[in-house]
Every structure is written in structure tokens, then in C-alpha cells.
Length: 334
Image (cartoon, rainbow, N blue to C red; front, side, top):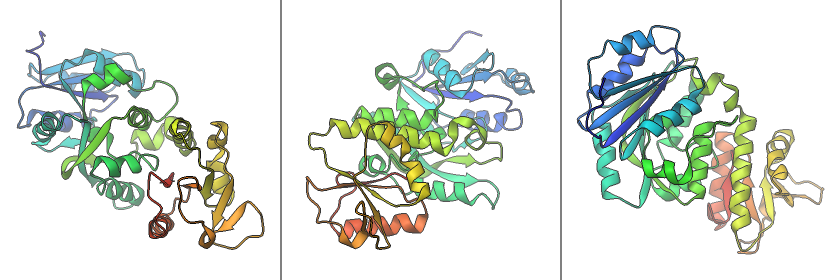
């Protein structure tokens, strides 16, 4: 089938054995209020009815390419290479766009040319026992401005991957998804952040983010916590070594879990000087949090590896009360 005229937006959707949900995802694109789009579907070695269902859709804006199974990163990069739009909208086979998603994101990027990527709030669709994902979505839904998103970049991906739209020029300038054994979206955002790309979130729900038990982030070995901490350490080290003033690194948190999480930091060449705990200790390298020095440009730079929700909030609140500024004097790493 001949491709239609050049679109403004290319929606890139990789799918592997998605016959249970693919029509819902495609229909949500067909229902968009913005008409100038193409939907680039990369059928990544599906062995179910996915391709058969897609071939029944009569739509000139639909581009279907079948590849031998190669994984999501390679499928995404292939889709980006053949996409013709000025803007790239990500979409997954098990999610659903609201009708005005593309229109609102395009309007924003057309108006704010200093922003390279825009996402949106999402609504979680899943079983009631998936509390971890619900908490993650609630956290991402509170981050809007480029500064808020940038400061939170090392905690976790600050937006839902299928909710983003970005300028295709970023792909040419800074590269696409890593095809090595890393969480490909998280690594891409950190790489683009490191390049100075501003990212923002619209304060409204434009995507239904479905959370099935077999979601890739739950099952694929590229999404283990160890790999996330390795990627974080790599990009923190790149950011830290660029700074003119090398402040000593102090770690908020102690114990076996924290020691395990900071191993990639040491491998990246960042050696913590002290650890901060809530319990007084006699060891010279561990101090009580109440003994933190006054903030200064040559004083310690703090990294918090505490991951429990209550503890993270208490640490952040305490540091801000002591005039430590997030991104300038401390970073939440978990």
C-alpha cells in the first residue's frame, strides 16, 4: 500500500503477540481529533493473530512492517528510522490514547519550541493489587515543569513511556533507544537530559496506561533494579564530572541494601566520603542526620538511596528545611 502524504506526527507502536489489545490501541489513534498522523506499527515477530487483525484495517495512514523478533529497542529504532513525521508519539499495544492526545501535544510543542519532549498525566488501568504501579503513576502525575522532571530524573522514569511525544530531530542529534541490556526508555531520557533537552508534562490525563501481569517492565531482564541503578550511576557520574567544583559525596542511608545500590556508583568512579543515618553511630564515616553541616557550595553533595515512600519524603522535607536545594545540593536516587 502506498503511503499517504507526509504526516505531522508519526505514532510509533511496536507489538509482539498483542492480539488481545492491539485493536483497542489502534482504534484510539483512529479516533484522534488531529488527523495529520501516520501510525507506524512494527510487528515484532508476533506468532498470534496480531498481523491478521491489523491487515483487516482499511486505513491509508496505517504503516505495518513485520520483522523477525528482535526486541522492543530494535523495533522502536526501526520505527523511528522510517517515521516521516516532525513529531514522534510513542504508543504501546496494550494502552489507549484519549481522543485529543495528539492535538494537545502537537499544539504544545509548536508553541514551546525550547521543549524537546512533552508527556501527559496518565490513568492507571489494572487490578487493585498492583499498588506499586499505582504509586509510581501517582508520583509521575505530580511532576509537570521541566525543573521538577529534571530534578526527579534519577529516581525513576518521570513519565509513562507511551505518553510521550518528542521532536524527531532529537533522534538524529542524540540517538535512539539503546539496544544493549538496559531499561531502554529510562536510559534514553537520561541521555537526552544530559544533552540539555527540556521535557515537560501536560497537567491532564491523555493516556490510559494498562498494567497487565505480563507487562514487559515486569518480566524482561532489562528492567531489573540492578540495571536501573547502573544506568543512574553512569549518568550521575557524567553529570558530576562536568561540574567545576567537585563537592564530596555523602550518602543518605546505610545498611546492606544501600551498600548494594551504590556499587555501580563506585564502579563509575564516584567514591562516597560519608554516610548519613537516623541513628547515632560511632564509625567515623557515618554521621547522624542532625549533624549535617550548613549548606555551602563546597560542602557535601548528598545522594539519597532510601526508597521507602515515607522515608524519602521525610528526607527531602528535612533537607529543604535546612536550605539544601534539590538538584543543586542533593539528588534523590531511589
